[in-house]
Image 1: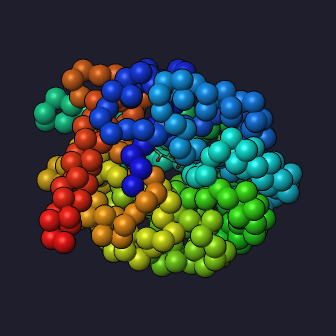
Image 2: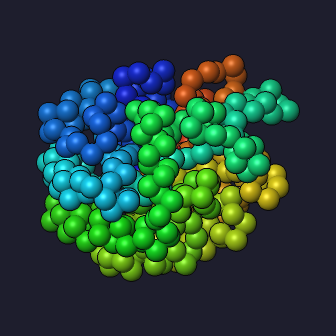
Image 3: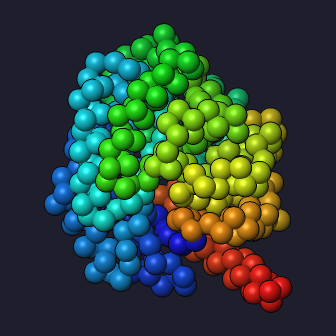
Length: 349
Ligand code: DNO
């Protein structure tokens, strides 16, 4: 595996200089954040990002994400133009040496939480999700504060979009995803960029919007939509793991050859459709992080891996889920497990 760490660009209070001091991190996961969704990423901008990261002594490993325009998800309007742009962006990324791109196909909202800084008994705070609280919020009134969504929506554009989704079923979304893959994966194959879809977070429908990248059967269906190693997965343990029916260790074994990017996150299930984000260590949450890391190790996983969200600890403030300290602890923990697994294997031989 190749250990990486997410960096949100020049505005990120977690600087590249700090990331470089985390033992075992060589790769950066990042994106260009100021290009409107759907427009082409120019090669010069990509090279600028790459050069900045290399000047800090690391490499740009994965793009997370090249966002997919809503017209593509709704199968509407300008989708062909946006798909053509997406392909151009992939070609430019390939020219810059990028070989892995993460994206998602969640309508309107990316990852959703009810509270971005819930106080935990140990004095830290974390993101939590409580279904009842979320469903009481009105996205049109700006009551939903989301760390991951496109902040360029106005009240009017959001209203129109939510209205449009009323006539889009899960099957429609599957068809629109296939339409996208049929055009994009062909190009990804040509330029050798591995596409890695991120599961829906949480993995169930919210606000009546369809969500389809949610469980084993749907991941299988997704992979069959376009059967190519370039049509792969970002396997996010935290996103899928909040549904107790999803066994992440089994998913790793089942889809190992199609997982290009691993997000390792622990979560604590606190009720039905309710969870808190937890420290990475197995005993801190509901997921068997040791078992998950071991599954990757057993499979000889050579893809990219990164710690996922952390809590805010030691008084740190910053982008919810993406502080330095708890993610650095997560990195070291995962690296420690990996080293132990390596050693045990060597000694057994
Ligand atoms: C949250 C992230 C997501 C992810 C996108 C991928 O922390 O895991 O925002 O980057 O869904 O497109």
